[in-house]
Amino acid sequence: MHHILFKTMLLIMATIALSTPAFAFVNPALLVQYQASLSMSISIGEDQEHEQDTTLPISIVEQCYAAWNRRDTSAAAACFSDEFVYDDGQYLGSISKKSELQRRFQAGLETLPSNSMLVVDHMAVCSTTGNIGAQWHAERPDDTIIPLTRGCSFYTTDETSGLITSGFKVSEMVIKPSKTFSNRLVSSASNLMQSKSANPKVASTSGQTSSIIEDYFEAWNRRDMEAALNCFVDDCIYQVEDSVFVDTFRGKTALGEHLVNNAAALPSSCKIILDDLAIDSKYGKFGVKWHLEVNGVIIPNLRGCSMYTMDSEVGLLKTGFDVTEAPVKLPGLAQRLVSLPSKLGLFT
Image (tube, rainbow, N blue to C red):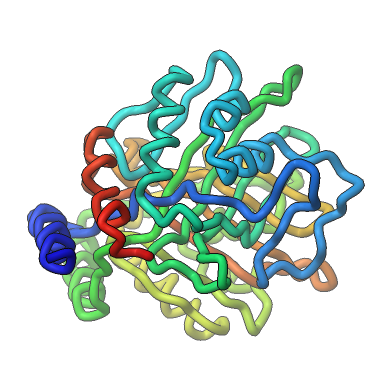
């Protein structure tokens, strides 16, 4: 019976998703228990290269995650300032009231097993702006990763109080587009747009100092893929989760092919606009919040977050993880429905 209900839910989601051009949903079950407490050093994922410096104060985002792990949604919501905006790439609208945020957190808790936990793979804490970027996934107590629970978040904080003033969360696609679909879309889009799009006009940054991540996006925007690839080490690993491309690219050759295909699927006037950055110079990590524009017009439902790590010895990027918001938004009340498999014990 449980399996029938679960399959029925997936069929409904797939039917709705397939009615859209990109046919992809992002998993809504993403805020889960974090391996930390405020009295302990922060637990980090296996991909981290270092133990976090426990002499540094725990960031407000880590405090929020730790409270969430304790199932203390009130304490988690208290990490936000009185005036804030919280945006989940899965759902329609934004949240600006703590009571609504607490209800969203509680609904999220019900979407996964009670003993699940959030493991932070990478966190970029900018000492200058207070911005914080995070890459994470969900695990069971035996360290097995719960499928379809990876994602990125980006936060801004208040300079005076240190509390969170905005949060944006995006997560991996539950329904993955096939490579055949991606290749056909690239081919048709390239043919259609080749004669209709003007070359992008990119502002010159000569004389200005920019970070390696800004150099990378600037190179992509002017379609200089050689310069974009020069921002990465030879053995780089780049993961993508969006409604067209879902894949892991290992090495510069594979990454180069993806960058070309990605650009071919979009008008040549399309640019990636960096909304905000979290540059962690101490640990060589970059959290990025961005959106896409064509001729200065924002493309709906094409915002995202990324996390990049850098090889500090050579000053080049070694990993990247891009996640785009869901092309089809669900109403907030739908989160209760999505929690049904967990309540039925299907994820235990």
